[in-house]
Image (cartoon, rainbow, N blue to C red):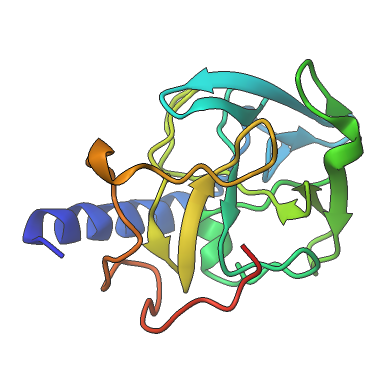
Length: 185
């Protein structure tokens, strides 16, 4: 891992921890819970265009991610991980245009149900600071790789010619990255 990449990762970790401590989650407005779900208003999923093609997003433009260490029934993103990768709450979910409602589901977690799509638990990323941002793509943190979710419900994996972060880096922020992840993706 290059020193520049290490500094960038360390900055995001420190910034994310500070934002989480200040109550910043994936919400777009005051009174929202993680994942942009305001009590009573629900979560609307949409399909947005990105440099990775058509991807899942919340109606406020936040890109959705999946974690390679997860299984279809269990989120492996716990404790400090949720401060950086807030789980999308499964409250009053609405499938927008292009979203396959039959692919929507939930898993149980201590904080309440988490939304899944095609069996993948969904998350937002605090490093995405504007609608349509996809800066979490390919990050190796908290014991696995993070991928943008395609509109078809599969992980978007950057090609080796794109110059994007590959899954072979180690020493990333956010937890141990040694060994292989035991997730189902």
